[in-house]
Image (tube, rainbow, N blue to C red):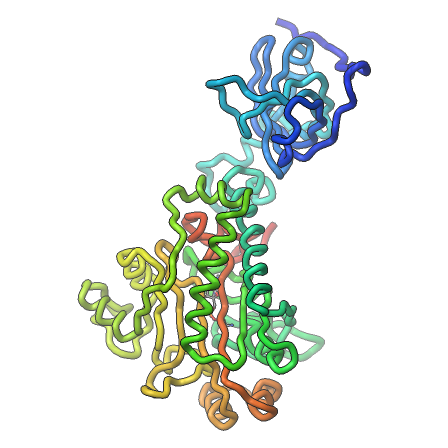
Length: 455
Ligand code: 4AD
């Protein structure tokens, strides 16, 4: 049966359509509106069409009837075609469901950019069961999907929420450089670059720079990309990630731990209260319960005992002994079994970074903390910093680092030192926990890991 070629014209006698974003659809019931967006879903029958439009701020189901439903051009619509649709927003009758509980009764539409059909069609490009690597090649398209875009919306709300927390706590935002000449977290994961003929690196952490701000700005934080040349592929390692770091002056280790509990509980509370992110977290992670402080505190030595009691071996397949690293798999088993946030504290000197303050009552261990969350493991790492000049210089030398490159960092211990501490939070890691994603890759806009630097 041949479709009718109908020239779709706007009825000029209708009230002018108000240009809206879909997030405000609920406030426009009964009004004639113009919606611009992309075709997200499409169901066409004879005499009736349902077109779900997405504009990034929401979704709306549009109902096409009469000429609009019969027209040939309607039957040529494809997924991801960009379109302008006009019509009146109506509350859905009882028993029917659509996004927001409303539908748009269309009286006119206009195609802005027709998307391909057939071989080149959107659904052919982003088949859900396709190889993950093929899907990553199409990241610019898969981002349009409901789950991935929901995570990105939660991400935005999360960054907003944590900045609100920092503001309330009096931390000032700074933007340290990404191109640096000092390492922070070990040479093995450094991205080296040629900087006008000099050696430089992409930053692994802005910590050292935050420390320099304390005497001029007081407590500070940053939201900055960090780079790690991680060779192995894991669920929770990226080569580039958004690192949220804070640094606090004149605190002790207990103050740091209390601050971290407050940071996590308050920020999560704010995200859950967000009108967009709250419901999305419910969708993505229906069983999520907001953590309550105080968190379980566990010393490294007690974690070893717990692991040994539960028959979880170290990386050599043996019982854990003092000085062993608690690697990802063991850490995850422990965290998942315990099933709630853990502040894992007091790691041995030899498995932690050169700048960490040693505990006064046991010089073998440091005033360090990892925050572990179920399903992800470590989301945050922090510590008190060595603030004695001689001790820090000795530690830099022992680490085999070039002392001269750290002159500005050691100067802080010379020109008015103070006890201080801070932390780094992996944005993609906390999102993986909040949104219940299998991997941090699903929480990054364009994830970077070895072998992947496109799109
Ligand atoms: O434990 P890390 O290495 O600590 C530091 O960089 C400190 N200098 C931070 C500080 O005290 N200012 O990293 C901190 C957090 C980790 O807990 C993890 O959440 C995240 O950064 N992280 C990564 N996230 C994704 N991919 C990677 N390769 C990551 N490496 C660390």
